[in-house]
Amino acid sequence: MASDSRSSMLVWIRTLESLVVGLFVFYLGRELAIWLTARNVHGFLAFLDNGVAAIAAGLLVFLYERRRQRTVDELRESEQRFRVVANAAPVLIWMSGIDRLRTYFNKHWLDFTGRSIESELGKGWTEGVHAEDVQTCLDTYRQSFDMRKTFKMEYRLRRHDGEYRWMFDIGVPRYRQDGSFAGYIGSCVDVTERKQAEAALADMSRKVIEAQEQERTRIGRELHDDINQRLAILAVELEQLGDDPATFSQNRARELRNETTEISNDVQALSHELHSSKLQYLGVVGGIRSWCREYGERQKMEIEFTSDVTGPLPFEIGLALFRVLQEALHNAAKHSGVKSVQVQLEEVSGDVHLTIRDSGKGFDVESALRGKGLGLTSMSERVRLMNGTVAVESRPMAGTTIHVRLRLGSKSSERLVS
Image 1 (tube, rainbow, N blue to C red):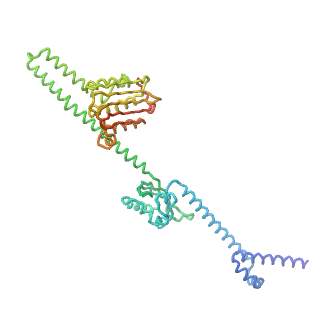
Image 2 (cartoon, helix red, strand yellow):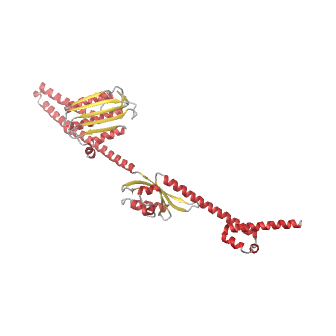
Image 3 (tube, rainbow, N blue to C red):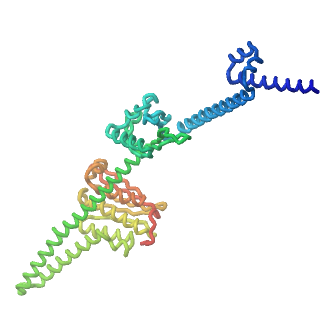
């Protein structure tokens, strides 16, 4: 029994020796293993004050190294995933360190700028920012960085072809797992089209306001210079008639009546231009036909109006067509030099078409759109608001044709007029 106990103890001791040697070989490397093998291992073990403590220390080292290696592997894998996602993203992505210097740009950024990552790192990326925007851009970046807050800014960045594009840049602070500040990460998107649309809309709004002011000026001038003067003359003649009734004759009474009727008709026509009640009472087709006839008589023009529209049209569509027709006929009477105009209204596949055609002097459409005139602009804006289209065909000495197309039902309306 004593022999068996001694043998079991020996096996246990040798097992501990092997474990200690294995742990040291695993952590201290091949050189230490060779050194231990070449010497008295048992003497080395005897040198240890406590073999169990050595085993515990080896296990702690082993667990620490495994955890450290696992963390390194996870970070490497996480970084690899981030780079794959960042390079596949359809936006420009950048990162910076705690010193504000940029440390990373994704592939989309480099493709956009056409520069190498070495050229962009640090402060190199600012070389592509427009000279007028760079200071504001850096000030925003620096102030937000110091306060550790999210920022949003817009600036122009030079594309690889030399064109500057408007970028919307959002930057957010990033932190490590222990809560310490690690820098910033940001993304940029190209918003040039949006900026151009905003500028165009602002310019369009300005032109519409100018058109309204011009229309008010025209109406005021007509009221003051024409109708008001004629009323003043009529009042003087009536006063003279009151002073000397003997001069009153039937012919003179007829003349005064005719003058009064003309003034009344002109005021009515001006009122119809501002608000045509006939569109409500006669419907779109009837209202437009009536106005064409009256306007032709006043302008000594022949306006040929035809229509195949039989069903009811929304009031908003009728009003839009009426305003475009007014503008077109005013321009024809003022600039075309002709006395005959064709106006056609038709319904095709759920759309209503208005065509206005004359064989007058014509004009260069592109030059007119770039000029100060607001007629075509106001037409286009009114039709655009109805989700419709307008096309102008004209050349000098070749006449003018205007095509307007509106989709029935594009604007909801509870009021329908026939």
